[in-house]
Length: 296
Image 1 (tube, rainbow, N blue to C red):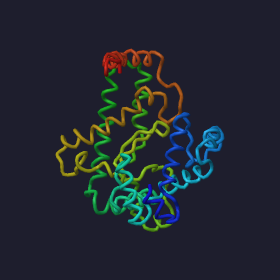
Image 2 (image 1 turned 60 degrees about the vertical axis):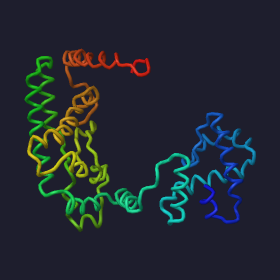
Image 3 (image 1 turned 90 degrees about the vertical axis):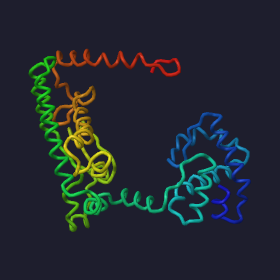
Image 4 (image 1 turned 180 degrees about the vertical axis):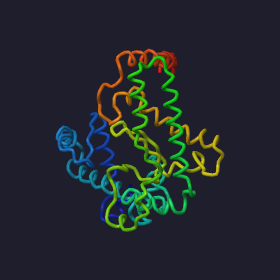
């Protein structure tokens, strides 16, 4: 902190400022305050004001604290002098070390223009055929799921039919949207609505509100997937991810949303009771686990 504040203003008594800020934060902590100046929460500031005003150096300390929070937030974007100070400070207080500059730049690009970054990833990193292969796997896993659902004697027929219809209605978003290969489109518009995550992110998820599962291109690499692997490898790795996200649409949360993503009861009462009874064994099992003598 001394290095950073010294770089900002060589005339600043950095040592005294650090001592004041540390004392100020201790005062806030001792009163269990949740003041967060970065969020500009006026109500929190007002509630914490008695403790702020009672700090040793009053408003000067608050100004230094605000300055430090602002600087610390933007340190990764500054030059090497600040990065060195930031790294030293992080090591002392036990924070994670600042990543190399290129990873920071990639992170910024992914945040600002995720679809544009997805294009070179698809061109140069993702093996040809990966998207089609995973799409085919998702179709076969959904088909197997429907077959299995049709054999469940604890699901009443109407609910069984609705579950199969919901599985058919799942919107499948795999790897990336095809428009990333349209240079004209990318130059004028990014789609921030349907693709909420950068395709290059290593992630997969199910969204109950849209009855939609998403498998981003970032996850379609070793050790999760490789287009050259035999099918049993692909289904044993990426297939597990697909099946996992699919069943989210029918778990204790997903079953509350119908095929259109509407929050409404669509399971019959009997099917709901049977589901709850069958799930009880998991509740009983995990309730018996103990950590340090306490039930988990």
